Length: 258
Ligand SMILES: CCC/C=C/C(=O)SCCNC(=O)CCNC(=O)[C@H](O)C(C)(C)COP(=O)([O-])OP(=O)([O-])OC[C@H]1O[C@@H](n2cnc3c(N)ncnc32)[C@H](O)[C@@H]1OP(=O)([O-])[O-]
Image (cartoon, rainbow, N blue to C red; front, side, top):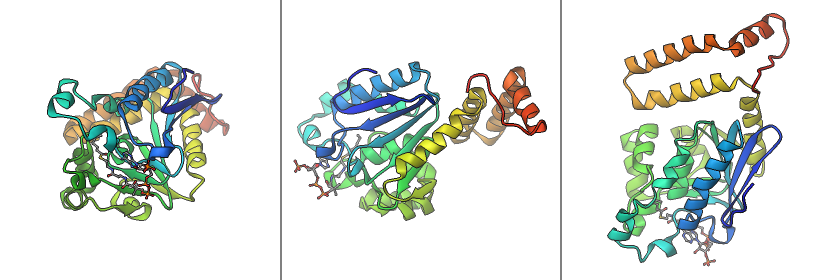
């Protein structure tokens, strides 16, 4: 693995990649160096053949937002000329499943990155929020769009216009995250989920991910057709025969690429 200054990347023998944001002295605030390294690490993780990626933060935060010290003196020109922030979106485009393991604060850009993950689990004392409004700005990496799709207009307006923070239980009730686990076990639980995914048929996992994402981006009829076509396609591969034969023979499936 390459060396990174603002994060670390590991890929274990089960082909689970773990990307850890690593600026704990600034609560993993997202700066330009981290954004560039983040994009490079996603490429490296994908090229390593990883089957799932866990994203977490070192210390007492997942990420407390974009780096305010770095952002303060930016201008419209320096932001828009370089299409600043676009690289973060690469997380949402990753072909393998991504699991956000949220420890502590997930605020501003940190919350926005969390919402790009496919599965989100959080420790009991994690907190979420989009406080950008208190700084005279708004979310810039999908926060208004993703939050509104997840929780609906009224809740999204409440959270974005007040910038208030919510705890893990409220985040689960609203649908932002799927599981709340004991603090200190977040990464371990994410690894359990990742290993389960890595043991499944890679093609079926990819098909399922694409279909779920399509539900957000298409009409119901287009989504249904897309799902049906993917379903048909999976019968072209050995994984389907193996999965069904294993069930009938009462043994665990051995998928070729797992
Ligand atoms: C990307 C697209 C658009 C997104 C925009 C945004 O995300 S806007 C941002 C939206 N996010 C926010 O508005 C949240 C801003 N953060 C907070 O409100 C508080 O830090 C806290 C409530 C998370 C924790 O309070 P606490 O009393 O427990 O801890 P503490 O406050 O003592 O922090 C420890 C150290 O970390 C530092 N640091 C922390 N965050 C940032 C940051 N974003 N930046 C830079 N530095 C940051 C903090 O300065 C301090 O450094 P020092 O002085 O030791 O050199």
